[in-house]
Image (cartoon, rainbow over all chains, first blue to last red; front, side, top):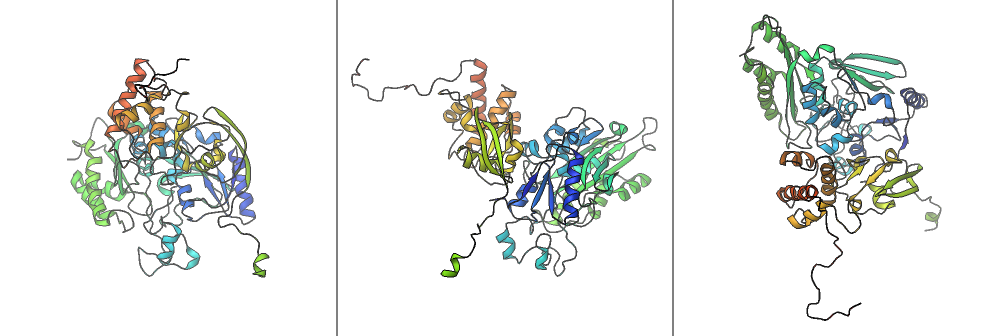
Length: 328
Length: 196
C-alpha cells in the first residue's frame, strides 16, 4: 500500500514545531503530527483522514526526557516498559501494548492521543466505499454511522490505548503546548466523548509530557486487559486499579481509583463507583459487578459488547486481587 | 484521440516532494539517494538500495517480515519514515553474514527447520540476531518475548525457538560458523580430479 503524498517537516525544537503549525493554521492548510508513526502511518496507508503536510516530532530532544515523575511525549513505549524507576502499573501497561517491534517505535504521546478505532473505520478505501463510507472518515459524503444507525452526529469509535487508565489512576497531569501557549490538566480531563474530536487538543497543539506526583509510589495497583491475542492486538477491554491506605487504620484510610479503557470513545475514571464502595465498605465482587453496569461498549470491535462487559467484571476482580484483606 | 494528447499526465498515485537521503546499509555507504519526503523505509530499502531480503508482508506492522536493525535496534521498516533514518546505520538480513560465514542463527535456522516457506524468515533472523547480541543465552520466555512481533504460519514457532538455542550454543562455544562455500562432499565421487 502506498502512502498518499505529504510534505514532511522535521523541526528540532518545540518552538519551531509550534511556529510551523501556526503558519499552517494562518494559511488554512491541513496538517498532522507524527510521533512514532505506528498509528498514523497504517491509517494513511488505508487513506484515512490523510493531510498534505505532516510535522514530525522525532528530532525534538526536549520531548524525550524520562524520569520517575516526568514522562516525555516522545519516550518510546519499550523504554518506558523497561525503565527501572517507572511505577509498576505503568510498566505493566506499557509492556502489554502491541508487540516489541511496535513498542520500539511507538511513543507515550502517540499512545495517549491514539486515534479511536472502529470495525467500520479501520478499513481500506474500497471496503469503506462498499458500505457507502464511514461517518468518522468520509464526512463530506454525509455517510451515516454504521454502529448507531440513522445518524451522523455522534461518532462512537472506541479508544483502544493501554497507557491512559494506568496514568489516570496515578493522577497524572498532561502538559500541552500550542500557538496559544502552554497548559496542563489532569489526564482524566484530557479526553472528550466523541470518536472524531477525541480530546481537548486544539489545532496546532501537542502533548509535551506527563507528570506523576511524587507520592505515586505509595499507591499499589494493577492493569488487566482483554485482547484477542497476547501480542500485537489492541485491548478489547482494560481495567487499571490503584489503592493505598495508612498503616494505622487500613479500613478508614483506604483510597481507591479504577479506570477503564477500550470500552467507550474515551478512557474513564470511575470515581462514582469507588467513592460509594469506600463509604459502603463494598466487597471486590460488588465493585466489579457495578463496574460492569457502568461501562457502555458498542458493537464496533472484535468481541461483542456483552462479552466485553462480562470480562470487565473479571478483569476488575483480577486487578483488585492484590488488595484482598482490605476489601473482601 | 486528439483531445487525449492535450491531457496532462496525472500519475495514479501522486508522489511527494523529493529530498536527498543517505545511510550506511549493511556497512555500505548509500549517498545522495533521491527519495520522496513521505517515503517509507521499506520502499527505499527495496526499490532504491536493492535490499530485497526485506519483505513486505502486511505493510501495517502486524507480521514483522520487514524488520531491520536501525542503529542496532530492531524496528519495522514498513512503519518508519525513511527521512527519520537519514545518516543512520541500517542492517537488513543481507548484512548478517560475515562474508562466506553465515550468522549462527542463519546456520541453525536451516539445520533445525526454523524456516519453511521462508517469507517471514528475514524478519525473524534480524530480530533474533539483535536478541543474541544482547543476550547470548536466552531462555524460552526471553526468545518468545523477542519474537512476539513476528508471525510465522508454517513452523509453529517450536523449530524457531530450537534454532535460537542452537545458535546460542555456537556463540558460546566460540567456534564460529564454517565457510559455507567450501564443499563438504565431493559432488563427483569416483572421478579423479586434476591436481593443481
